[in-house]
Length: 136
Figure 1: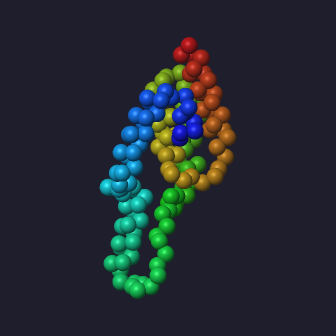
Figure 2 (figure 1 turned 120 degrees about the vertical axis):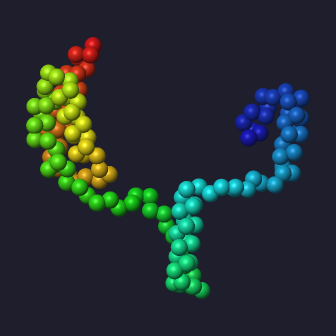
Figure 3 (figure 1 turned 45 degrees about the vertical axis):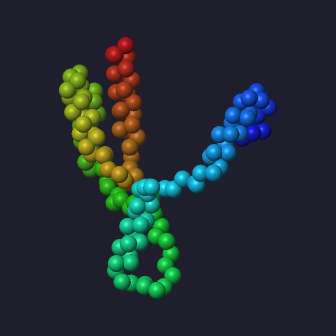
């Protein structure tokens, strides 16, 4: 840190900083008081493995943390309303809102199966463009 800005400081500032840095050097390094969520999960996984009674006395590998849990793939195309395009083109805002709510309920899953979503994306883009123009 010193090479970056040390020469730009006045001598009085340099001595003051040196005194402050000396105080910090004498302090012990900070200790972690709480575990991160990932560390808590690893500790709990290790605790449950030890409670099972399997592998006692053997070298066990650390439990890996799965950052992407497995979700079941859901086919949402069957759940999407057939009259979505007509309802998005409706002149009544309540019909359009209900259509978007129904679409959201149908596709609100962590993992969805691949499918032909092109028409839905185009309809939403057209709906958004028309809505934005009418709002201006």
